[in-house]
Length: 135
Image 1: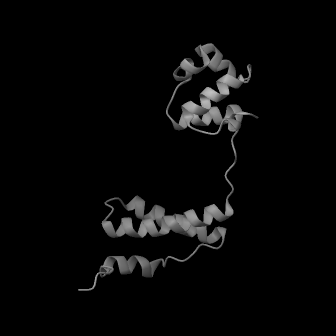
Image 2: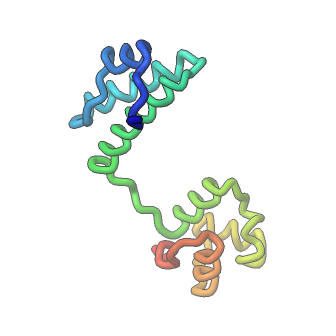
């Protein structure tokens, strides 16, 4: 018995024939691939073949973006704001670290600098390197 890939359905063959997955080499190909992804997502009623094909296209987009699009490095207050948003936290959720909500708001509004201890505590809380909190 040979174990291998399952035979693709006619629909999957239609997908890869209509828009063959290829490594993305420029912005036009990136946009075309993203448009293809959106077209499949917009149709609703996503099948397993759609999910498999989207996974392939998504990997191609990810690979291109990793090579060509530099992510901005957030530091200090901008990082803290992003971490709050990403973690779906409110300023009041940092009171245990920064002592009061007014201090948290002062830090977020740039009216107050973080102390070394606060930086260390925030780093532990968010599980990141404390140097990212230093601007």
